Each structure stands twice: as C-alpha cells, then as structure tokens.
Picture (cartoon, rainbow, N blue to C red):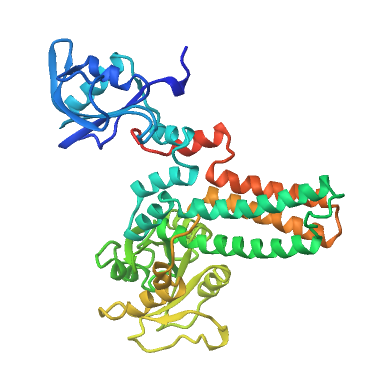
Length: 455
C-alpha cells in the first residue's frame, strides 16, 4: 500500500460558490495521468510543462464542464511534484462533480494544508515560509500582508540561519579545541571569547524577540476592553470609536449586560474593541454574570480603557477597577469633560490619562491619539518586517535565548567547556525548529491542520 506522500492528492482550491471560475488542483506522480483519463482534448501526457490546454472534463461519455487545464511538471512546481490545475466555470455543482471524478479515477482528497506540507517536506520551502502562506491568506490589513510576504521571501528564515551559522562556527571551534588540544596552529577558544560572542548573540536575539511582539499587533490587532462603572459612557465611547450605534445607550444603569464587540483601524492596525457590562455590586443574576465576565476579560486584553466620570467623585467601584488594572497596559479615560469637573485624580499618580466627551466629533480624538502613542503604531509601519510572527516561533526563540543564557551562566561558574557546549547545541537545535531543520510529525500535523483545504 502506498504511503500518503506517494498518493496523488486533489482538492478544490478556490472558495466554493458562484463565481467566474473554480480551480481543482492535483499534485502527485499520477496527477497528469488521472486528469488525462477524464479529459477530452489533447493528450495531456505529451504536452509541454507549464502550458494551458483547452478541452472538456468528461465522466464516461458525459461532458461535465468546459475547462482550461494547466500542466506543471516536476520539479518546478509548488510541491515539486507534478501539479495539474483544472480551471472550470465557477459553480458548486460542476466543481464538485469534477472533484468527484478525480477521486473516482485514483486521486485522494487532500488534507488541510497538504499541498503546502508537501512543498515543505520536499524541501521547496521551510517551515517559516509555510506558515507565511496561511498568514497571507488570513491577512486582515496591508501591514499583515507585507509581514507575511517578507516571511515568504525568506527574510526571517535568513535571519535565523545567520544565528545558527554563528553558533555552528562557535561549536566547531569548541569541538576542535576539545578533540585536538595538542595542535598549536588551532585558535584557542577561551571562555572569554565564548562569553564575548554569547553576549552579542543574546543581544541580537533579545531584539528580535522584543520586536516580534509587533507582529502580533500587525496580524491579530489590539484586543481592547472598555471597562468602568455603569453610566460613565463606555457604550457611547464604543459607538463613537466605531462611528456607528453598535451599543445601546440609555440613562438606565446596567443596560449593557453582555459584551458588545466592534473593529476599527488606527494607522493600519486593527483594534478589536469590547464594551463590557458596568462594574457594580448587584443582586440581578443576569447583570451579575455580566459583571463577572467583564472582570475576567481584563486578563486577556492587550489594552484596557478604564472609563471614569469627570462629573462625579471617585467611587469604591472606580478604586477597585483602577487597582485591578494597574499592571495592565491601560488608558484612563475621564469622560464627560464637557460637564463640571468633580473628579480628583491628583493624588493617584496615574499615567496615560485623557479627557473626552462623546457629544462632539472631536471629543474622542484624544483617545485615538493616545492609543497610537502608547503602542507606537506609527513606528511599527516604518520598521522592517524581520519578525517572528506566531507563538510557536517566539516560544522557540525564547527557549533558545534561555539556553544561551544558561551557557553564559555556566561560564561565569567555571563549568567544564563540554557542559557549556550542551547548552549551545540546545540553542542551535531550537532555532532549527523555527525554520523546520528539525521537527516532529506531531508538530507538522498540528501546524498544517489550520490551513485551508486546497492550499
């Protein structure tokens, strides 16, 4: 029985529905032969590579659809295998029938991401580039698209390879000195030299990890929670930010009992904004659940907007909210600044305070400006796009950094050089996992399971 990599796979590679065209894609050693069995036109086994061929897909003697068939022969293809793309009319029925016909004649339905998985396993792209393929599809804004494209062209992979080359050279020097100490013409690798090189590598890796946090903002946006007592203007702020009446606004305390969500873009970065139930003590069961849910969302937020009322003195609930959010990235919004000022924050020593109102178009401008300033959104766009872009990559880089740190500590504690070498090799291997030089089947299955079928 053939292994999965020897199967010829097939999938619909376009969104299923009514459209101008649909594409059914095959990859594998038998891709051309399978399509040729169902094709009325030229003999596809004899046509040149990278040609488009007009004809019909047939099932026995029945014509299913008029098509253009692209033939791309190995190794110059996406998967490095023979690839065939059937361009048919964009309809659900005809597209599915063509897929079913390919399955009947020997192809297997592709798993999610299996085309890209084959491109990786066959050595055409590395793991970072594989992840970039899905990032391009999922891009929510122009900056996310540029970030994914940078990874796809190899900028990030090359950076990781440079790190590994430095470690490889250092490890090679250590090995030579350990194995051949009697040769005088070999450069002696002293602990001072290793410590000096480790310091530079740690600084470089720290910078990459730190700046990679920007990639989360670019890809996923800023998860923003608006929190405060009832009737301080949370829902009005949400509506003004979104420039639509998304949340119900009344003078009745406790109107918002569940979360209300919306999205806006600031300097090209997405803000996922959540308006929460007003924080107060209540005996109402439904409102109480809403309050508990609001408090729980603070922990997961990238940004907490704490709303206070300019026209009221601080209450016990206000104090509790300020205490609970003090360790979070937050902005204190003193709302209703068009009313008489009764609030006094002078003794609180709070940072990032803005005064707003929702009665004018300019009233919310200061809040937007503070968000841009706090997250340095303008500078994110001006930087290069050499980032690690997901939790897997950042986690591995962090572990690699820790191994370098352990090696450095070992040097300070006068550990034997072969013990230091273990930590350096571990860092080398962890960086290799980022680009897929080392990997496990379990990791690959998990990674590609999140891909579209047909990609």
